[in-house]
Amino acid sequence: MPQDHRTGKLAEIPVEHIRPNPDNPRLTFRQGELDELQESIRRYGVQVPIAVFKRGSHYILIDGERRWRSASKLNLKTIPALIQDEPGPLRNLLLMFNIHALREQWDPLTIALKLPRIVALLGKELGKPPTETDLSSHTGLPRGVIRRSRLLTNLPKKYQDLLLEDLKKPKSRQTLGEDLFIEMEKSLKTVMRAMPGLIEDADVARDAFLGKYRKKVIPNVVDFRKVAKIARAKTVGADQVTAREAIVRLLEDPEYSIAQAWNDTVSEAYTERDIVTRIDLLLTRLDEVEGGGLDDDVREKLEELVSRARAILESEE
Amino acid sequence: MSYAFLGQNLHETADRARKYFANAYGATHFKAEAAIDAQLPLKPTWQATLNGGYILCIEVRETPFSQSLYEFVTLCAQQGKPVRLWVAVPHGMAAPTFNGELKQARELGVGVAQIADDGTAHEFHKPVPLSLFALRKTELKHVPKIRRETLKTAEDTFLSGAPDQGCQAVCQDLEAITRRFAEHTYQAGWWKTTAGAKALPTRFFRRDSWATMLEALDERIDVQQVKVKCPTFGRPLVAGARQYTNWRNTVSHKPKTLNELQKRDARLRTMFEATRDLLIEWYEVAKPLKILK
Image (cartoon, rainbow over all chains, first blue to last red; front, side, top):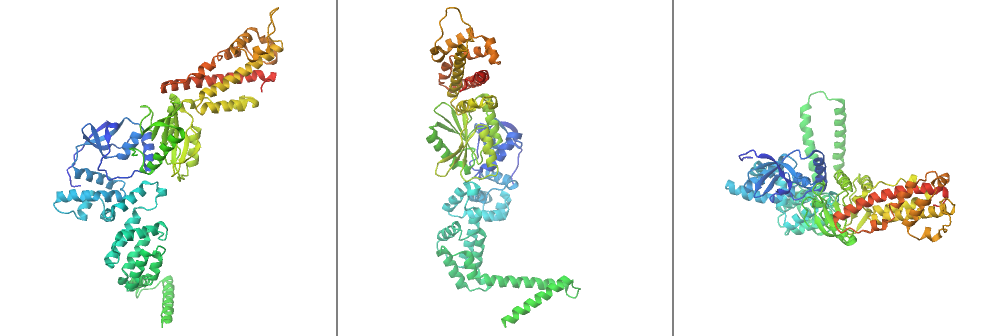
C-alpha cells in the first residue's frame, strides 16, 4: 500500500469502549464463523490483537470486528489492541481492504458496495478516475475480483437489497447468491453488446431470469454463459435471427430453458467449432511426431480416427 | 431489531424468539445481548423477567449446545443463579451434531426450542432453573418401588421451577409416614405408658398437630421394642422429622427480589435434599411394618 506506515501502541483496552467502524465494508457476519472464533477465544483468549484508533473516549475498529464481537459476547473485560493514529477516510477504507486482501476475502457484494466510495476518494487523491490497476494496487484486490465486484456495484439497488437479504439467511436457506447475479450480469452485458436493442429494460430481463432460476427452469448459474454464447451466434457462423428469437423467447416464455434455447440455436455450431479447434491442435501435435517411430497405442488410435473420419465423410457424400 | 454480536443469519430467529417467549411465557423487560452478571462468561442474546421472578435467558444459536454454554450453565448452577436458559434454534438447521447437542442441553437443564418462520415454536424440552439444577438427584434404587413415583414426581416438580411445591410434597410424605408409624407402633403396644393415662385417640395420630404427635412419639417410643421389628429405627430419625414440623412456613415464604429468590432456591434445595434423604430412611424403617402405601 503506497502510504506511510507507523507502528501503533499495543495495549489491553476495555471491550465496552470499542465501537465498530461505520465504514467497515463487511455487511454480514455468519453465526457459524462467529461460534468457531468464540470457542477459540474462550479456550485460548484473543491471540492476535485487534487494530483500533482512538476517537474521543472510544476506540474505533480498523481490524478485528469478529474478535471484538466474540470477546464481548464472552463478557471479556479487555482485549489486546494495536492503537493507531486516526486515519483519513480513504486510508481508513484502504487499511480494511488490505488487511482482508491478505487474509480471508470478503464477499463480492461487500466489496461492491464500498467500491464507489473508494473510486471517489481515490479519484480525488489521484486527480483522475482510478483505473482497474489503480484500484487493485491500492486495495490489494486482484483485478478479477474488482471486475466481478463491479458487476454487483452496477446492479440496481433493489437487486442488491435482494441479494443482501439472501446473504443474511443461513447458508442452507440461501436461494440466490452472488455468483447468480455475477453470471447473469455478464451474460446480459454480452447480449446487449452483441444484439443491440434486443433488451430494452434490463430489469425486465433480470426478473425473467430470476423467476426461472427460482423455479429451477434454469438449474444452475453456469447456464447463463450459454446465453452469452447464443448472443454471439455470429462468431461461430450460426443463424443470428434464430438466436435473437431464442433469446426473446427466453425472456418471455417462463418455461423455456437456456438448455432448450442452446439446442435450438448454436449447440451444433459450437460443437463444430470445438471439433475444428481440436483437430487443429491434433494436427499441430502430429507435425511434431512426423517421421518418428509411432508407439503402438498411438498408431491404433490414429487408425481408429481415420476410420471414423472416413465413415463420417462418406455418409456426407 | 439490530444485534451487535449475533450473526445476521439469526436476526430473524432472535426477533421471533423474543415474541414467542413474551406471548407464551409472559416474559417482560427484554434486554438484548447484555451481561447478567459481570463474572458470567456469556451475554445471552436475550434476557427477560418471568412471572415467578426467574431471569429468562434466550441464547439464539444454529445448534442446541456449545462449550461456551456449558461453562455458563455450570457457573450459574454453582452460583445458584435464578436463570432459566433456553436455546432458540432456527427451523431447518440439520447439523450432524444436532441430536447429540440436544441431549447435552437436556442433561444440563437447558431448554431448547426450534423457532419456525411463522413465529411458532417446537419445544424439545423445557429448562430447569439453574439455581435449582445443582440439586443432588434422588437415587431411586434406594427407594421402595411403591414410593418411587411419588418421590420422582416431587423431584420433577422441584426442578420444573416450583421448588416450594417439590418440598411440600416430600414434607407431606414425611408427615404421613411418621403418623402411620406412630399409630402402628402405638397400637402394637411399643409406646411406654404411665399408669392411669388415657388411651390416645386415632385423631391424635391422624389429624392433631404433627409437632405434638412427634413430641409424644419421641418421648414415649420404646426404641428397643421397635428395633426388633425395624432394625434401622433410632431416635435421631424422630428428631430429624421434628425439624420439619413448621415446613409450611419455610416453603410459603414468597421471595420479592432476585436476591431473595436466589437465597430461597438455595435454602429449598438444601431442604429438599435433607427431607428426601430422611424420608428414604423412614421408608426403610416403615417397610417391615407394611405401612407404605
